[in-house]
Image (cartoon, rainbow, N blue to C red):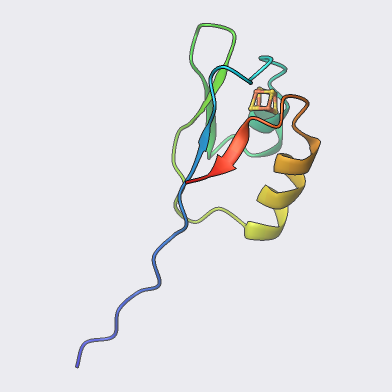
Length: 68
Ligand code: SF4
């Protein structure tokens, strides 16, 4: 049987809660990007360090980063 790779857990930015502080982009530039409209979005959720991501989620002033 072929081994299945564990699936990356998906997360997203709630656009209504994001304040556009860019802290998540500074902390994890490979996973977050600027939408160009004063908010951040998830650029790529795969391979995100779970511990670091939890820290970024906790530090997010809008509590906008959520697991899907
Ligand atoms: S840390 Fe939170 S509030 Fe700041 S840009 Fe990222 S998602 Fe938006």
